[in-house]
Image (tube, rainbow, N blue to C red; front, side):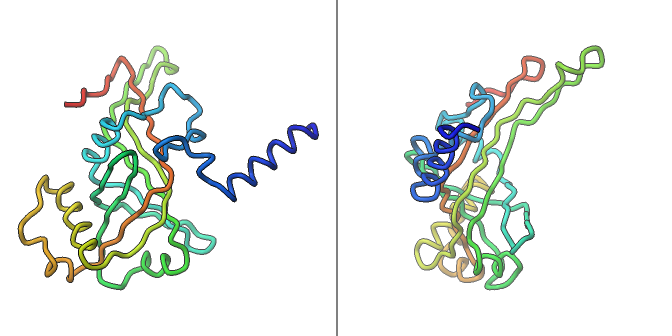
Length: 200
């Protein structure tokens, strides 16, 4: 490795620690997550479509030196490129709550529109079509009006509407958490043999 390349790498690492936003493109979309740039999914309409259609995501926690991942239904708020993901859980108990007391950094992964094509004659042409969104943020507990708002977003995404009974009384029965997403990356593949459905 030449001295110049070493300095360049060290400068980049320092920048990522001091100012992580340098490594995040406009609207929080992470530019370094994709090897094939032509698969980047950056259209806000397509990102919102993916969030709404997936409905369930995988959420990964860091429990000391052990990873911990769970599937979770969620709601969301996506505005001006900024993403918040809302989830609910049992009141003040559970492994994830204990983890968050020590480390509230959480990663997520969601995907939809999966379809595959397999070729017996030419395995190299086999593959998948999909839309996906991955990211990292900080998870926090909500209270008051923000808690009710978060629970309403969960119901909105899961049921397609917000029942009138999702109010302060309903919110008092659960804990509601918000993942303030810091960086995210949308990706899609669209094979001609199994094309993605159009967004309506």
